[in-house]
Amino acid sequence: MTTDILAGQSGPRDFAQGVRDSVPIIVAALPFGVLFGALAVDNGFSVFEAVLMSAATFAGASQMVGIELFGQKVAPWLIVFSIFAVNFRHVLYSATTGRRIAHWKPWQRLVGFFVLSDPVFAETERRGETKGVVTWGWYLGVAIPVYFTWIIEGWVGALFGKMMPDPEPYGIDFLLPIYFLGLVMGFRKRPFWLPVVAVSAVVSIIAYRTVGSPWHVSIGALAGVLLAAMFSPDARGKRGAQ
Amino acid sequence: MSTTIWIILAGGLLTYLTRIGGHIVLSRFERIHPRVEAGLNAVPAAVLTTLVAPAAMNGGPAELAALGAGVLVSFWAGGMMTVFLTAAAVLIVLRNIGI
Image (tube, rainbow over all chains, first blue to last red; front, side):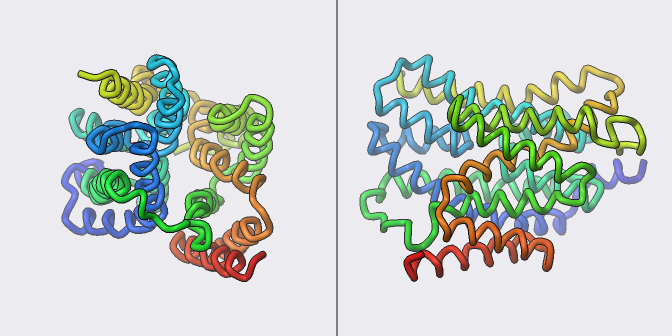
């Protein structure tokens, strides 16, 4: 297919578009990257360790959980397991995005999956939906700025965390939910969107109150995914899934 | 190496396994069943919703108004940036006038 050939050689315009698409991600994630660095040092990490964790994990929520448990002197294996539990949702991202980047070279996929965080995944799905193809160049354009600003933010937070202003009046603490809401709305043209959102919302809130965080993410997401697998028009083969 | 470094590296490795694991499992199958396909198509909305819903539940009037504004703007104007900036502006204004 011609799209496959085109997808292999992604031009500089793809990369530039990717960089533009990375801007809202960077704005939304910025306070959390800095906050992570500050909290990490607060909980007994060195500056180097804080930066290393941002570079090795590149997943904000799990990093926060990790340093929180570290500060509580929890057993190391339990900290590692908790990071894994928080990040388990990525299995779903991996399976979903894998279909879009199946035409990449194996090493490109190995690198690409390393930086498949929440927003990178969401932007990739959006890109695939609007353009029909996700190129390596576009993906790098998104991932490189997001990845490296995340590391720099952790470093800045670790160095200057004590001087941070109170984030509350600026709404900084609530930027991520707002950003994720924008992404959820961006997928509203998909079949069966509303039932999936409704069920995931209700189940995640119930799970949040009963089982607790971070399990509410996996439980709520699984509820929505299973609902779609059972009842969406695609699942019953009424329209051809792409 | 210190225990901390080991914790960081092991956490990073397991995170990477979650990020390639789904693809590795799925790519073993020649054909993807329509139900699996439909489930995967629901992944973005399903997961991202779980990142918003508890935050909305714990939010006060300013937070709920911001999210509500975001929903309205997305139906109206569409773009991600517009939604993001409008909702953030609503939140900041309401918080600063003490709602």
